Length: 448
Image 1 (spheres, one colour):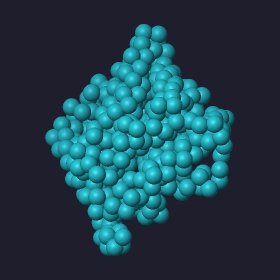
Image 2 (image 1 turned 180 degrees about the vertical axis):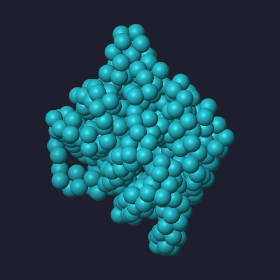
Image 3 (image 1 turned 90 degrees about the vertical axis):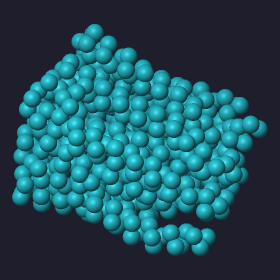
């Protein structure tokens, strides 16, 4: 019964206390994972070479595509579980858990194998050159073989957090990060396995994470756990999971298309090192974004539960507090990028050309970063209350309708700086649109 109380408190405890309780473990987990990616790139940059950073940067869009399927199932299932628990429908939440696991297994294996078969043409289409292709290929071959573990680990970890175990979810994530941090330098520097060693360390750490979350949901004393007969796929449940998780899927797919266009444009206007510079910029910006996503993950069960329980004002207060927190995070990264761009870039490589490109790009690319937190949190808020269509619209507008045209137009006038300038132009425009949609939707939500 104690575990059930952990979910009931979402409707009665103080908002600030709840947001910290659920966000801090998520932030530690997401930030630690992002820091690992940064440290991993530092290991690769110093242990393999600057072209390896460029090769790794080329894999970003492909990894986003792979993550899109896992995020769709994981976030969709976690949101639906929160809403079902707010409705005191524990049986329905258990069915969602079982269907999410089976869906992740099917997608993880099938998507990984299909991508592995067509890996070379995919990487060339993403902007690989004869110099960077070997690095990108070696990394992705290993990662694709372990794709199913990535899906299962991330999906079940999201559901664990939504069922009242944010600290345990954080602990499992930290365990995978620690495993990565031990194995990566061992494989890269000790065994001389190069970029394949970095990929193998990632896969093995996610195997550890998958085993941990599987053990949790196999125990009968867990508030939500596996039950016989609840693993059978049911179309109504799958449809709900996919529809709610679709914004994350489309956002990551759109991000993959955008990064591909960026890489192709960077290859044209700056060469392989410009792609490596973007890899550095993307890693640093992603650190702040992952902290904001940690706040979103803390917000999601609180908003979902209270919205399901018809406690609308509590849901709105949670959203406002999360916006404030997210904005503070992106504002801090903005100041770091503007004041210390060269020092941040030099941490990844000792190559002066790459440092110069990354430092210049960092200052331009993060010009509008202070308002990015508001846009990310607001899009996630609509998803948390089941209004997936609004979240999809806001995500796609930024990634497709605004950013892609900027990437196609601005480089013609400003060259390489035009590529860097595209993101702040899209961020500013999409934030204005998000504010307009928010004001319109809030009137409807408050009437509930």
